[in-house]
Length: 277
Image (cartoon, rainbow, N blue to C red; front, side):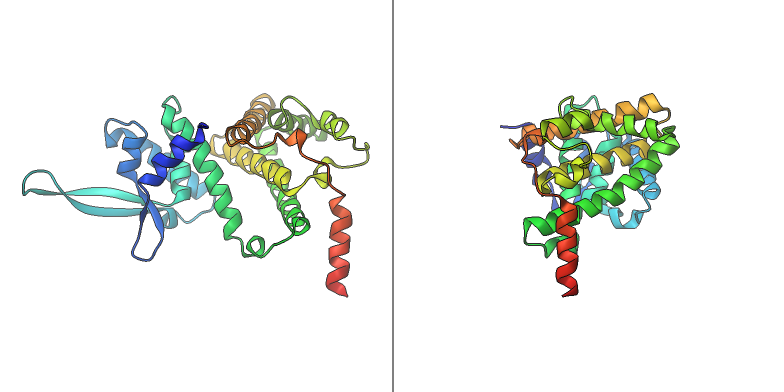
């Protein structure tokens, strides 16, 4: 059994469905699962998660819904209890801000990060309609271009300022994800020319892993107010390493061992010509 399965079973077992068919989790039940002895000790994590939600320009009311329920405390006595109904993204933000020394918190961080990213992709109507590998590659490559710009902006605010600084920062992310291989090492291993961009020769699986690395690094830098080139580089490496560990846990192929694909630029040009015909 991989490390993610226990977390998956535990978190999914307490998931609920609203009358409208939307999934949600009870903050009180999540707090127990994350091994908090008292709910009041869990509330700072909720507050940090709400703040992170605001900073991500997400609607707090979409992910944290206050609830008031009557629970039985004796043979016939009832007591009003405050709770919060959490979306999957809300759970993700909470486990990111909970006590990382707790084993279930660490497992939850990985599990909800994976599931949240999968949900984001599957909810995109464009992605749902894609059938071929080529279409998925083009879509994910464009997503990665967009998120790399956001990652660069977050890194700049952290102190990664010059082109050389950013190249070193990006290399740390690759080294975490590719088991110590930097961009030039990956290029060499995949037998690409110096003029060929490694991202343009990745399949959809490898692109998705790199997209996950980029989005999670950006969020972590912003959420934790990472400051300084050294800390930014370390953050990118650790996130890449975490993504690599996740791939290993689920029995996936390591990214450096995935096949080299034809240039995505060529596919994109063919796709545009086809649309114009």
